[in-house]
Image (cartoon, rainbow, N blue to C red; front, side, top):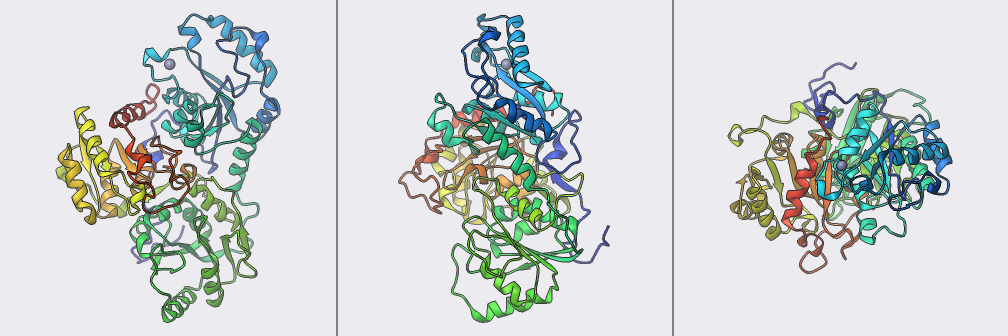
Amino acid sequence: MRQDQEDPYQRRSAQVYAAADRAGSGSVASPRPVLYDAVLLDRDGTLIEDVPYNGDPEKVRPVPGARAALDRLRAAGLRLAVVTNQSGLARGYFTGEQMRAVHARVEELLGRFDAWLVCPHDDADGCDCRKPAPGLVHAAAREMGTTTSRCVLVGDIGRDVAAALAAGAAGVLVPTPVTRPEEIAAAGWVASDLPSAVHEILRRQQAVQPATPPTEPVRTALVVRSDSAGDVLVTGPAIRAVAAGAQRVVLLCGPRGRAAANLLPGVDEIIEHPLPWIDPTPGPVDPQAIRDLTARLGAIGADQAVVFTSFHQSALPLALLLRMAGIDRIAAISDDYPGSLLDVRHRVPVGVPEPERALSLAAAAGHRLPDGDEPVLRLRRDAVPPRPADLGDPGYVVLHPGSAASSRACPPELATRIAGALTDAGHRVLVTGGPDERAVTARVAAAGGTDLGGRTDLAGLAAIVADASAVVVGNTGPAHLAAATGVPVVSLFAPTVPFGQWGPYRVPAVRLGDAAGPCRDTRAASCPVPGHPCLSGIDPEQVVDALRTLTVSGGGGR
Ligand SMILES: [Zn+2]
């Protein structure tokens, strides 16, 4: 272990907040820092052709390539479970004995599964296990001795993906002709068929493991993540991976990300400097400032630099400065030809969650999370202040209507109705926002809740979020604070960027809003469509229902 240093940002051994802290005693997390322990599969339409209410083993037909795909997962050491809604039991269309005969036939054709989880209920029963409720996912994880965040579920309709997300698992949609277009639009991860889904699961699993460990020890690593708080938070797991393989980590961040950088475990020292090729509202390039930055980067004495970017940002201008600063091992993601600017030119397919995208770059640079560390967002506990005592007991709902990008904020009129609906449903609501969002938070809180607008910085907000039962928020920094503290998220997600990349990571979540809205994939900072229709169509009762869904634990798992 390294020695403690004086620098206030050196807190490697500090306690951290993480989703895993909240896991119940029934969860047995594997110490291996891989993404997945288990793959959960829907039955009808995913593993076998959908024959409605089938009680006849003779009618079982596997989908093409199913056996070979499942055997690849088994060979990779992944456990397999089937999670299936069988309301035909409740409706009397077939008996339990007939269903067991069907399942025996499935195993005859497709091999053994480690667990079978069946919901025998009908929609009218209001059970916790019928997908999209997350009960079967919780139960499957428990039965296989892992946690939901280390499971990925493959299914053919929106209910499957929703159940996975609500349990904090990953969800892959493999559409069939019955899958609705809006379900495909809402899914963060879509594969064309079961073998492709399996291929991508294994590829992502591999991508966070270094092919080769670092050839030389790293004394000082420079990691770079410019841009905003959310960007910095989702890069946290990758920075922890670099920290595990380097004696000292220096983080270069921008002014918008500084407050988040202060919260990251694994960082020894922070350099704050805007990068005009990254900043969304840059000033003119100041040659002297660039010369000063280059000199400062040279003075770090880094023997490796890992430059993290979003898919639309270029790492190359900074790579040039790093070369001029004398750093001779530089790794970055770059689709653009880097010439001799990069030693590791890494490439990542679109759609990969940002934390995994960054972890895969760290892996390409020779680093992985240490044993016992999970690929989840985390915060330094010592960087988070105590929660103000006047807020009462934990268990409130945080409603955060704002965002630095207005296209991703909850429309104030909708936030007001949500505050009212939550209060009417018996929730204690805290309305949070930055100093420049006070007018909105006051208006929203007037409909139900306590106005905390302007009362917290990012660290103070983290303290409040950490004791919430859930956070209702758009695609913005506080959603990632919730993920980092293991707090479920009702995500009012404007589709300006892909949900699969920017959705709350490895924490129970419900996605609301029109995923096929006209702003989809525009990356617009302010909504290009009058009325902000992707979010303004949300019914506040959907938020109330989502909170109910997120409290499901499948019988004592949490
Ligand atoms: Zn059920």
